[in-house]
Image (cartoon, rainbow, N blue to C red; front, side, top):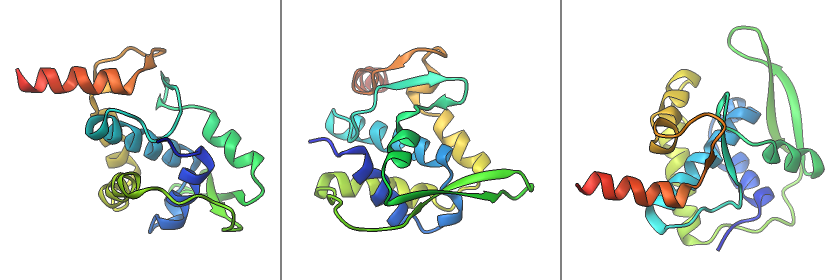
Length: 157
């Protein structure tokens, strides 16, 4: 069973230890990693995102769109370590959201736990080291379930 995107974003924002790291790009890629892990473990994504490998790796506008359409979220402008502008996602109201089921929670919590201590460079390296990104072309649709099965077959041989 898939989660609504707004519920997944809310769970990440609420439970991510380093709130100042939750840029639009990081949340986007966290959801990608969650979907990838779910495809590997359960043969399905948690979100219903059709992932595209664009110039910046796995990225879709639907995450930002979902945030901007829901007044329980806010995109707050701040600056990063280098003094450049950064937009972080903030949860303004925590009501009316659906919680993840046990399987979903296990995967989301694992991805949060594995990534929350990573700086941006290490985080991006982790994303770019995933099979779908290493073995796909820019501009391609990333069928994570198909790619997970392909990966498992290659790993076994």
